[in-house]
Image (cartoon, rainbow, N blue to C red; front, side, top):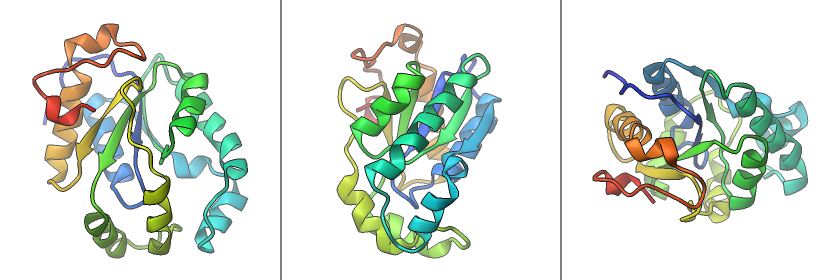
Length: 191
C-alpha cells in the first residue's frame, strides 16, 4: 500500500485497550514514513503496575502522562509522528492538544466482542481483559469540534490503515482547524 503524498500531522491512534492501537499505529507510521511511539511506554512505572494489577487509573494518575504524550507529539511536529494512546475522554484529548494543538485523532472503533476476542489472543500485555468494561464505560466518542475521525476495526488491517491514510490525505486537512472537520466522500470514516 503506497501512502498518499501528504505532510502528516501529529497523529494519535486512540481507543480502548485491545482495539489495535499498536498494530494500526505501527503500520500507519510506516506508510507515512514517520516514527511510531506507543504511549504506554511513556507511562510511569507506578501506572503500569496499577493497571497490571487490574486497577483502573484515576485522572490524577493520567494527567502527568497525558501532558508527556502531548509534549512528545509537539517535539515531533516538524517530522510527523504516530502515537498510540487510549485518549478515551474529551478532557484527555484536550490535555494532549494543549501541548500539541495540531494533533489529529484516529479513533479505532469496535464492539465489545471484537475487542474482547483480540485481547484474548494477545500475550504479554499488562492490561487485563477485565478492565475492558471500565474502558468502554469511560470512552467518549470524538465530538464534532475535535480534529479526527473513527475507523471501524471489524475489518482487515489493510482496510483499517487504508481508511486512515485516505482520511489523513484529504485536501481540506491542510486548512483543517479544531471546529472545522472536513466531510468527504469517505464520510463513513469521519465523525
